[in-house]
Length: 241
Image (cartoon, rainbow, N blue to C red; front, side):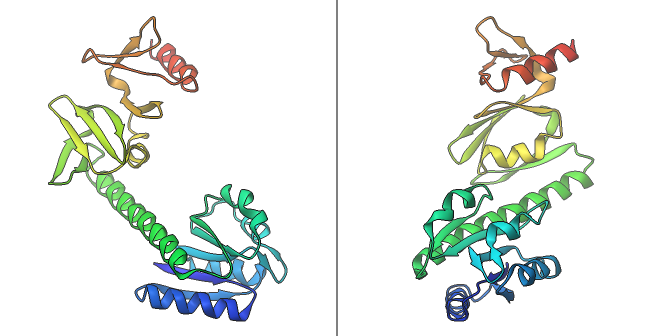
């Protein structure tokens, strides 16, 4: 994983670099910046996977920097002496918000979380590439014991089960070791629709909506539809019919 350190205080920057290298020797620190201008240039040229970002910089603040990017394709851990930016930080899906002086245990936990998300993203990209080279006809479903290569058209629906996902196919049910959001990123482009926070359904198996507002499937199962999803589901059914 490639990391950029953005911190305007030299001593604080040295501390972050030291802790990061000591805790994660495999991480590559691609650069250091003390200002918005420097940070922007390094983000564009070095393409870091993670930015350790101080809130207050020499020529502005971190929010001003982030607003200059249409798409933020790097993870963020905010580091600051000020707690009043925490709410704004949430809007940028920051991994964590660490207050100075930096606690090495907190930094370690935050970077571990970033690494996990980074690895998941790599796996997702690899999986999408594999699906593309396989004409989008199958999907690799990993469980605790093995990997199933399953035709996408055989999947009836997916249901969240904590950090796992129950994948119901025409032949069996597979308890996958990834969460529902992981599979939604792959299957949302392949005739699947999110009907509920916990349910993703293959459109080809939808037969209608019951009087009590449940989605009816061709395998005789019923799936709940959240209030926010009812309009989009009904509109899709109208177009289908």
